[in-house]
Image: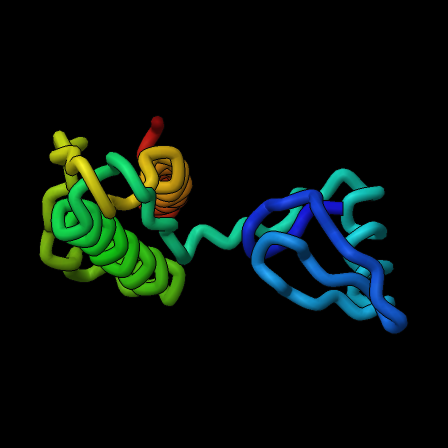
Length: 145
């Protein structure tokens, strides 16, 4: 089993389930069965990328990361609104076009930056979501990819 919060595989057993040894998340016996059933069906476990760990040494500058992640999330918000508009049948006027955030160079710091692997993983998840939304919008508009 993999922890849904921190992706750890280290657990300690309790009387009523188990606890993640890394982040302390408790899983009841019912939740464990649900997770194991989902994994048995080869469904991907939900990935919680809503947190970024701070590295002791090195990492990406926190302000740069938060600004970049914020721009990706705003673009996702825009795409979701555009998709909802098209699904409702409103093809009269397109939403205001905003530019897709581009890859940026994030500054590195010596101490206390966000862990590089976490930032890259989270940005990749958001980029995948953006690509999926863009292809769904193209399909709703009747455009070929």
